Image (tube, rainbow, N blue to C red; front, side, top):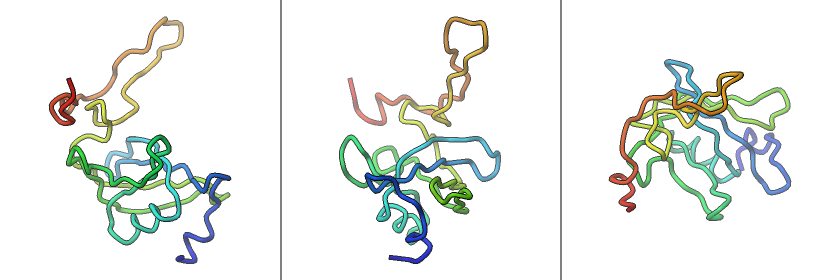
Amino acid sequence: MDSQIQGLKFDAHGLIPAIIQDAASREVLMMAWMNAESVALTVSTGKTHFFSRSRNQLWLKGESSGHTQTVRSLRTDCDKDVLLIEVTQEGAACHDGYYSCFYRKHALGQPDWKTDGKLIFDPKTVYHKA
């Protein structure tokens, strides 16, 4: 294992949270979990790879949608227990079809979350779901 990856602090499940940010606009696109193997794949391929806790497997961002992320830089925080990955996003980051997963906004004093994001695609057509 690369010594830089070895220096990261993974949790008891072998995971580390990764915040994905648009390198140009600085918009936060998503948060996902990574294990040592997905970090290594991300570093070696220049494309983001993550670990799915629900499926218990690695996944390449965009493998289903074609909406990939090209890595521009990787950073870690002072404790080395969180990653910040700056990317160039192709298409949308969110599986709901929005550019960013953070497309809902809550205004203080209001009862509901409001959609406040750019819809890029219809997930039903991309993921072929009814």
